[in-house]
Image (cartoon, rainbow, N blue to C red; front, side, top):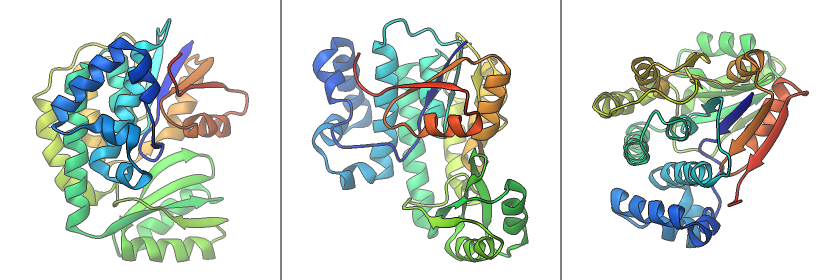
Length: 294
């Protein structure tokens, strides 16, 4: 079965999507529409901006969403049998499988980015990648610390990202290094995504998701919060609302998609991160990527 997966924040690069704009009339039309919806020229920043420009959350999220969704919309023979997206990528996946319209998806992504930015500014917070530690050890250490710090992304076996207050992350990194982690590396991110510190953003986004129409997708989407497939719009909505303060269960998602018959995973959008993670979940998995107009 053909599975398509969509990347999250961190995969952006200057010049992304420019070939789509120049070669596909449909992509050009939707890019122009995106500039109108967002109220600023995201195409200028994507095509001509610096890495620094692209790092702002309010730019990064719509940029990656647009790149992924427009690649899917212009891809010959795009017929997904299952989809999933990592964090922000879940919104790209929902548009690609028909659960959300392009316009509504972009509005939600923009709202999500702004709400997350606001939550980040409220309290200084960060994330860290923990490599070479059992998930259970990381969970145990996070639970034992008297600060906000939680597992945020279960990326692949032996790689987990934690999220929380600066003090919480510092304490957890020190403790995990002492417990044998190969690496405990602070990430350059705006804040503690997928942690309780995102609660103000979750509430703000919940209202927007509730009032947005969702349709039955053409295939199951495996969602971040429970790694389970669904085609029920009401369930999709609830899982999407929970996503901002819940961990991304990517390891489990990849395992479940393989168990349910995924034979080829194609990553659509910038970067190759998800292909690498899926290979670490199952080295026999077949992966491919689409990053430019084909």
